[in-house]
Length: 361
Ligand SMILES: [Zn+2]
Image (cartoon, rainbow, N blue to C red; front, side, top):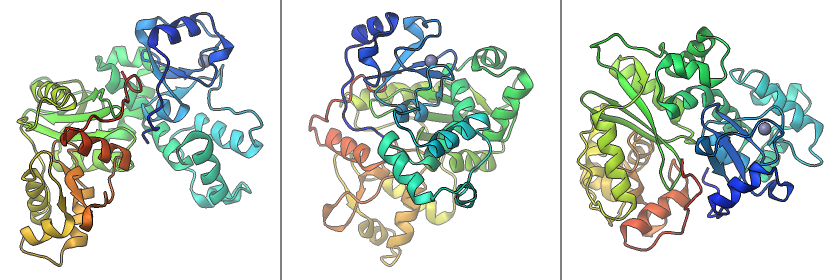
């Protein structure tokens, strides 16, 4: 979830604050340490990280969504007057992020799922399910973010052994984090954006994945990519990811209106027709779901168009954000309505709200 338009203090101020462990900044910002994948309060008693390895977040949800896990010493997820059951749930997830706690598990622990949901939304800006999902993916995110060779990633990820790391990666991507020399693979990289980090994936033939890291669909998309391409998934980059990164930077500056990075978007015949139709919506314009359906010669397929729009794996570049409800209301967006509004404002030449510093990974 994008956490509003909160502006963080200047980086120099936050840097000075954490280096002197200033309690006045507790709750004002949280700091993620790229090399360890851990996030802390500015007052953390552990050894202070080098400023070049730190990125800043306005709240725990943003840090968790970016793949950081809470520090065991300064416990940035704990609250004043936190109910015991909430602390217990967080400890349980932290002890084993890969164990999925379902609603029935919550009830078995004597807590009402609706109460859990409200509590997490209110205090962390994300549901317990979103928090759990982000924690499941955190190990893989840390590796992708660092983009380093597997052995280095193991050392820095906090996994005690290469096999522990391989298991975590494998749970997310279904494959071990390596490829034989010369074999094609899906490279996955971490791209910063003003709207929060993106995960990009590309084979040697083109870009096949571009998703916000906090998107509910992400785990599903990883599985789909793996199934569709039958290739190993490996952290790293290639020329298509570099091109996408360059084009996205210019897009967010309002200097690029058309992406030229090659795209791969296999799917059913209907899905491919919808996604191709999305690519034809010009920059700065929008279409309603029923207009897309009519364009495809099947005016009754509005719902199917909406569903397929939501299954788009290459966000921003295949502009599913340009599809709105009849009458112009925003409609849905997998990445959240704030992001959709931001992208549409950007393309209409309106100056989008400042989100600077929020996710300057
Ligand atoms: Zn800490």
